[in-house]
Amino acid sequence: MTSDGLPDLRREPHPNPMPDAERERLIADPGFGTIFTDHMFTMSYTEGRGWHDARLGPYEPLSLSPASAALHYAQEIFEGLKAYRYPDGGIGLFRPDANARRLNVSADRMAMPHLPEQWFIDSIREVLAVDAAWVPRQEEASLYIRPYMFASEQFLGVRPAKEYRYLVIASPAAAYFKHGPKPLTLWVSEEYNRAGPGGTGAAKCGGNYAASLLPQSEAIDHGCDQVVFLDAVEYRYVDELGGMNLFFVYEGDRVIYTPELGTILPGITRDAIFTLAAEAGWEVRETRYSLDRWREDAESGALTEAFACGTAAVVTPVGTVKSRDGEFRIAGGEAGKFTMELRRHILDLQHGRAEDTHGWTLRVA
Ligand SMILES: *Cc1c(COP(=O)(O)O)cnc(C)c1O
Image (cartoon, rainbow, N blue to C red):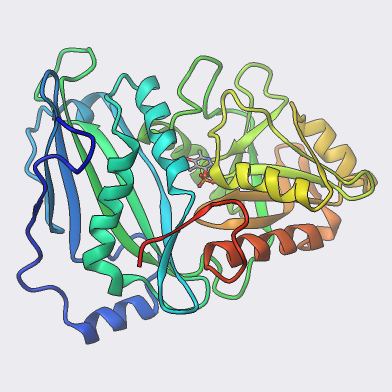
């Protein structure tokens, strides 16, 4: 096994990819996560042999043993990133090396094998090389890329599997908000939590999402967009949303706060915001941040903005927070200036409209 090229790579392009007109119709209004490109990348891992049988081929159903370990014990991890269309028609990725590293951090926690970082990038390049036409051109749309790894071994005993599959699929995605971002209304879950100390909260694994679905439905039932989770010990400190990190803006002090790492997912958008906010003269403090403080400071006006962030929705204002005890608004429920400027700045970097002074972008076409 070498880490130069993808091992045993075979390229077997789709014999009849989607006709141009049909594809163009689909990517003009793709929604999110239901349409997939013509191709996918797959690779297998066996203990002792390592990674092998890299293949770029048609997007098609998998053939799996019904006893595959992931189907029973959820040994599965994933990543999410986007390919962006640049103004000159080229295509770029935003910090894919950070996704590659994070996949391996998740793999460690879930007792799964590492994937060499270069192969992560190469596998995405393979898909984009054949499916470049699927990257939308309209403002804020993108091609969402989903690399993932799961335990494929046929085995019902409980131990880390000895066989895995790694795949990359891609799905055109519309702008998250059709008419620009609308401030979110959040529901505070005081009955369920997402992740406890020593748990899997910092790993990007499907199991965390499974645990968030019931509280997320509860949020919808209460007329909210998203659930916000508190810490699992005292139910006092804010963790994050089901799939987005949170920030709290204090314009008067020129400080932004965000929950410290531990049980939350270390977002790449979160990390980019540290750099961009510092460059704009803001201090960023990673700290425990309580729900009580959130409410008091929103009511006194000391807290001037709050926002959520992640690859899917970029940077999105939080307008209202509801819980069993009532609700409060941040800045009258309106989107704040810092939030919207930050959002614009990140989008400009991602879409190749602003100069990349951080080495964050990787042009692939
Ligand atoms: C992926 C994810 C995020 C956001 O991470 P980004 O790298 O910014 O996309 C936040 N929280 C959870 C639980 C996630 O799975």
